[in-house]
Amino acid sequence: MQRVEKMQRQAIKIEGLVKRFNDIIAVNEVSLEINEGEIFALLGPNGAGKTTIISILATLLKPTSGRAYVNGYNVVKEAEKVRKSIGIVFQDPSLDDQLTARENLDIHARLYHIPKEERRRRIREVLEMVELYERADSLVKTFSGGMKRRLEIARGLMHKPSVLFLDEPTLGLDPQTRRHIWNYIKKLKNEGVTVLLTTHYMEEADSLADRIAIIDNGKIVVFGTPSELKDSIGGDVIKIRCSNVSKLKDRLHENGFDAKIINGEIILHVNVAEKVIPKIFSLSSGIEIHSIMYKEPSLEDVFLHYTGRAYREEEASGIDRIRMRMVRR
Image (cartoon, rainbow, N blue to C red; front, side, top):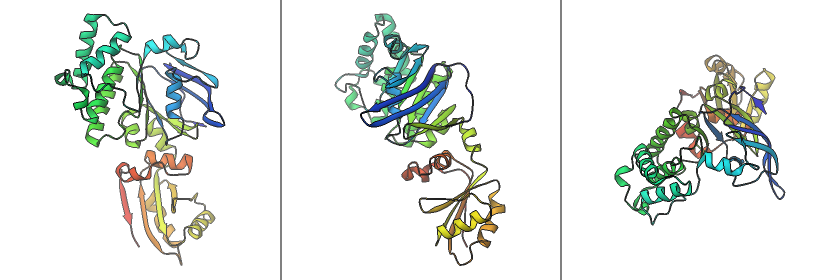
């Protein structure tokens, strides 16, 4: 595992965490420290281990080995204290849609033994924060998907947790609703809440997270701030489509370029793309260049670099909006 940055005060501490399901290793020797008041994102594909880690930290699963602490409490030995100090928004919907928004929040508050007057005040506060107070007495079954997600975030905050776990908080939502939820999450940081979120969306992690860990096959392959992760792979990313990728890659290697073939494209990380592209054309004799694209690194490129494979190709066009140019021969 490559480490980009050393952290300081911790709301969450994970040491050598392992979780096995029979012969499957879902989490493989994960160690992390997450600062108080930080928004930290776990980024990775389905099955990478993100939800399993959150489930262990939230005391829903016990680790096979290793240790984890939330707010200084051991998640196995002091599970009840952990639960009292955290909030969680699950990936799958968990609201009772036959109840009103107010009733859903009231039941949650009662489970945490919040006194009656404080319950009323907190229900109003959290509903106002997620802009749902006017719908407090509407049945949840009448809410849109985005409204339900906002209500679930409000419910997770009812008992004023110091750590909030958000498992895919905007999965399946339209871009506008997603950005509204980002704004709510950013507000939590201002209130000193530590947020650990999992996400499939590169843009979401880039916009929200103070730091990001990329997890793949149960292992953390790299972590750091978004800018540190992008800087760690170089200045510009060049992608080449051509008639013979293997031959051109070999020629590039012979001339000192660290070229890779990923999804049928040649990928290069260089300092200044404009200076390298003429050299690429000079090495392509007898090979038809279909296109050369270059841009500044994105988190998608970071994932490609450290895992050697694409992250979620169906979203690449929406994520790679950073400076991009196409050069055609």
